[in-house]
Image (cartoon, rainbow, N blue to C red; front, side, top):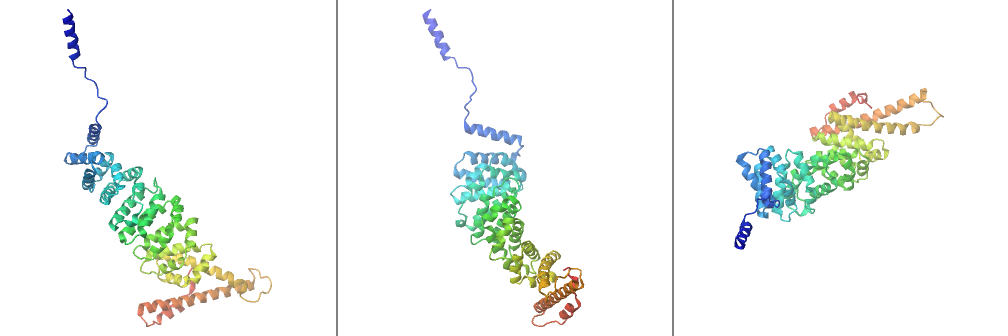
Length: 405
């Protein structure tokens, strides 16, 4: 009996345990299953499903060499297909790519930047995910030591991200990087344009103006505005800055203002630059006698007259506005000092009207003389050293009444 009981005990011990749920699943198996589930829900096409799953797995769990190969494959798969780019973002490829940007290996860094440029193309959601993953903090601080091609790719990535300027981008990190690229040498025109377009996107948001001014970007923009290849973009940013108090003060205290803008205003072959330069000068001259005095000393009146004659309709309108302010100031100066003062003269009296008429005649005479000299200069430019007598007849026949000032 005892022997039978012992045999039963042994049988019970050898009986296999009941099947239980394994709550500690292997990490890789769980990740693969999740990726397969997401891919199935998103209806990934069979012809590239395997490649994508392998690349995503390598980015998350592979070695550095596998991550590099995965980044190359993602670039190839996503380059011409917006739907794929969105699917890849949902599969979680952006955070590991952002982490690769912080690598000290330049080749790996460039691969990740190129992949992010492709993923950012046409998708604000993907750009927002890059910001959320901390892309700005991963970019190298010492941009100047990098090769020009690397700087160009970083500039392209920042340009894509700057489209989020009105939503969730913080300028304190991105602006110094852009300035560092612009100050580096050599730079292609394409790199400069990418950087300037990024700054334009940022300057379109008023809350960013203070940061732009504090980072001394005005000096860089004024310097680049003299380069005809990128002048228009530089002036467009300055036009955004000048409408704010901080931006206007920064321009007023810059030693290259107003001379550089007056020179640009004379670029007849660059009508858009002419319009922007005239606009910035108009804002600076408005209600500021000190700025108008600086402009007058720099010879702005003759250039304004050239713009009135040869500029675009918009540039002409702005130039006339500035000339009107100079005319009003001249009348104020002429009024009380144009001769002996015979007591107080009321505005409506014959003497007051006579004094006003004399001032008006004097102003018209000055305008005609300036027009004559200006047309003489223009004619000489057009005909060489020879001077056409038609210009004199044109000035004589053209009354200043045709100008609205």
